[in-house]
Image (cartoon, rainbow over all chains, first blue to last red; front, side, top):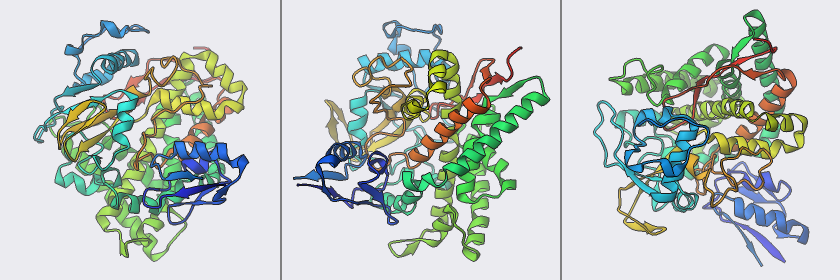
Length: 64
Length: 432
């Protein structure tokens, strides 16, 4: 099982992840992203990896 | 500096000892010349040092390193603790205290303060939230293009792509989001033109005193904000201005000065950058008719096409960072206080990252351009909004103005900071 984690200090809510994987990420009213499915399923992995790479503040991580 | 402006210029023919990026006239050179210079810098002097341009009434600073390689730019941008924005991100000179009042917004702040202020408005600019404004953007664009058509028909068939299409679209969209009333919008456009003029003589009449023009522009926009802030406090609405005046950071309301700076940042950044992406995009499509045909016929390439326009135009040419300590980046030693200009326009044509970087290819994928900034907390807040505006603008141009034809040379803005066009003559209805 792979977990998607957010560093709440780093995230500024740029929405890059939300653009790439709207069903996994949603920036909240506090300006920090919420992970909609933290326990990533097999089908989510490609999109999740792309979001991790694209995050401008390197606030996302995949943890096995 | 004078170089003949052929369509393709060999970077090897450039004598770097004669190049000065602080020479304002360099930024009037045709794109082919500027990119040949960037190619030469990237290849031979990836950290080139330049003296600062002179600004009347300001003490000249120590100079800056021009960063032109993608990898170096990313390394600097992604280490905000070492390369800070707080000494100024949008001017080569440290911001004079009196200008800081208006222009010292979060773009020139560091975390944690920057992140806290930015998060106040992050949600407004996310893809999900902007989905809800797409319809209103379509309405804005259709209205602007219909007016351009009427203007052409009432006159000799010509229009100005900048004044009639590219400028009014983002102006109306950002003013709608901020709740700026219609009668104030011409003033907003005029003052934001001055703020991002780069001192271009057409926009700054008194060349001996550009600072006063910048101050006056800031004062006018701040006065508008004061008025709107008062109105929103008494009568909150569903707009960004209400969010700015009613929310708190660390239990404090933003100060009037912070609100004024924020408001000016959103108005200016929301206007000029998208305008230049649209006008430079129209120009690029007219220079590459095969690409224009392809995109017109195939909306499925909207996503990659818009990214390529942003890479190609690089509407913001650079941002500044300042070293907070001595150190080394990719083999380059630097000292605390050193200034770095991150040349996005150069990194966006780096052959280490982009195959055939001088080719305008609307299907380019992947396209990891830095037109919205590189890694780091200052990545463009308005990126998703700009993408939508540009997409809707071009799709609607294809639909309503399929006969749009560039009909004269572009008039570039004399600015190193934004890749602006002042005018782009065009014609509707063929003939001529």
